[in-house]
Length: 155
Picture (cartoon, rainbow, N blue to C red):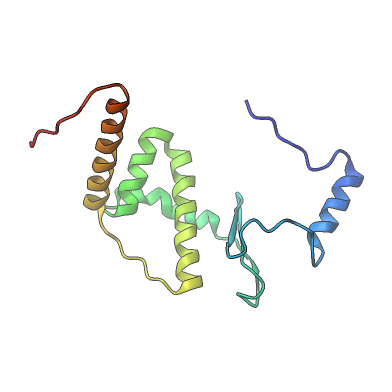
């Protein structure tokens, strides 16, 4: 079980932390200088990029509910995203899969808006083929660790 580390011990420290984050230079360490950040909440997304890259470095997007609704319709879609949603849904359950796909959609929309990229759907068949190859590679690796060798038979 993971323990959650509190950033403050009392309300005075919490206020100081809030003031620090709202200041021009909060003094946070830069982990990767060219990275963008996405903070995903239940009702909004916050996207942050370096200040020299965009005139408005932090943006708030309040359409996460719409993304969740869009993600929930993927069960009927014969697209790459639809196949990915159905695969996640079997392992995680519908609510977590919807949230995961809403996050995926948010990242796709971010890239389309920020970099002008277009989304090209490769189709459900491509996803299934790629997933099958991934599973075969995983099974081969696991078998070799156990001292076995797998030979594929054409079907």
